[in-house]
Length: 321
Image 1 (cartoon, rainbow, N blue to C red):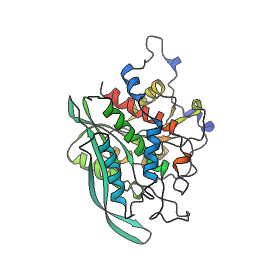
Image 2: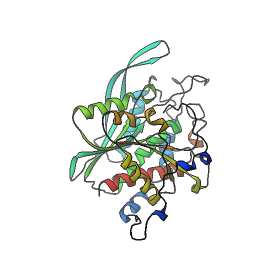
Image 3: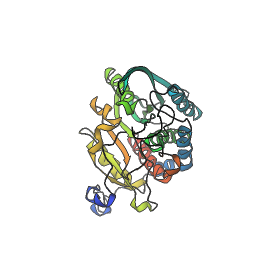
């Protein structure tokens, strides 16, 4: 993801917190947690998320012009297959990327896996995040050689992988097909998600909604009562965002806020442009290390990432009720 500038401190944005207080409901109307959702999301494991963030960091770089970009995608594909997704595949596409004065025509590789729906298999729910990363121009390292990208965005990939693992292990038989995707070349202009969203639009795919996770593991605060997740929505997903905020309160220790300043800067925007309802989850806690050589696994808050994963998973299961 490309931020223009950092988010303000949480204490300055309290008025933006979504109004989802339990005081708004009578005892009869107050939403109640679903036991099936609770059982499944409790299987989401912070150590598993940490392991996958470290796996991606250990590749050295995931820069979209690096020579290992196909290896990066195969590493993610093999992880999906290890969870039982025998249908995991690469979605390859050719794209021209510019770096300074140089122009490169490259092959890029999205990764896609699916859990087929048993009732309405042509109705799709999509969750994912980009797997490439980059460095600021002021960084001393060459991103072709080193760009760890733990928060941005190994975290979003790790959350996607963890939800895929848990749903497979839970023997869930969703009514609708769940697509898991990681996108290439986001940092060069949302190319991977543009490719996939346009292909879906061209085939009139029935996408119920798309969930995008980008920078979802950084929070330096240890007190979970002060953890905030920003749920970014679009004109066609306001109601979905309100539902996500409700589930956030029911199933996580996070507090939901809605600041749409960065709507256009991550992969959900590609799907919105193709008329698919989309949400974008991002930590509301400023990460000083993003796009730097210090964006490392050791600085991530994996319990925070687990809560974000729980929210995504609850939303997916709820939509299959």
